[in-house]
Length: 128
Image 1 (cartoon, rainbow, N blue to C red):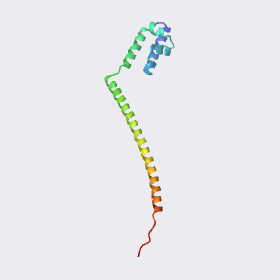
Image 2 (image 1 turned 60 degrees about the vertical axis):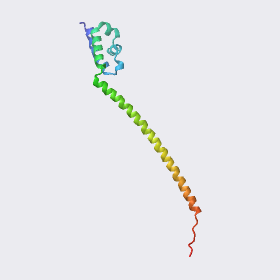
Image 3 (image 1 turned 45 degrees about the vertical axis):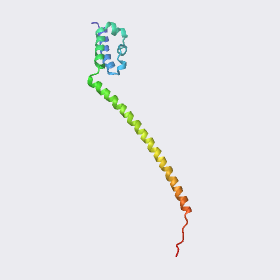
């Protein structure tokens, strides 16, 4: 094997690991080739064994086990529940603020009525 091919292979192998360590939406042949500093055709046509290796590793990483699928479903359900509880909490906070304002208004009104009533009451002198 000539040194150029060996250098390309080493760069591609390193690039495969780097790309697969990233987010799944970047798991493409183009990303691997670009990371290795090569054109995509070098991976797809010249180094077909590495292309097959990349596809096999990608498939192995992207397939979810039954446990992982269940956990993801449970996580999604819990996230929906958290959102529901946050919405409910916000509604309760709004209701509490409304009640606090109503109580404050009623206290002011009660104080005003008491002061008006107190000014209307006259004291009677005791009869002897």
